[in-house]
Image 1 (cartoon, rainbow, N blue to C red):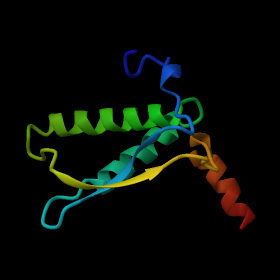
Image 2: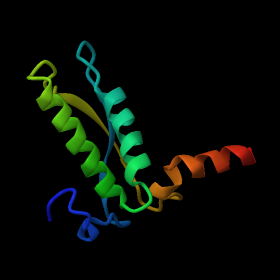
Image 3: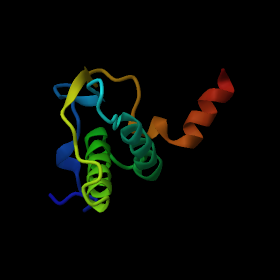
Image 4: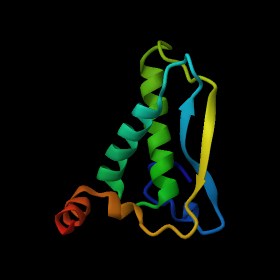
Length: 109
């Protein structure tokens, strides 16, 4: 299936899947994690209600890759130390990260 086609139902994240949730670069190299989370937040805001976790991560990666390519090689992907986590039994869904829902949660606190 082509990314961005809107039909990524085959990419649903299940309780059996682990995936790379975030990463930190090694000391002395440019950190991309700020760009990762900034881009991820924008993708969630744009698509969080209708897409699965795996689709949101694919869209985030697609945007980051396109951004790096447009820079003409100024910032190349660097080797990094990975921090792995899991979404098994997640207590929230992508739609929970969309701004109106987050504001409702903040109002309760």
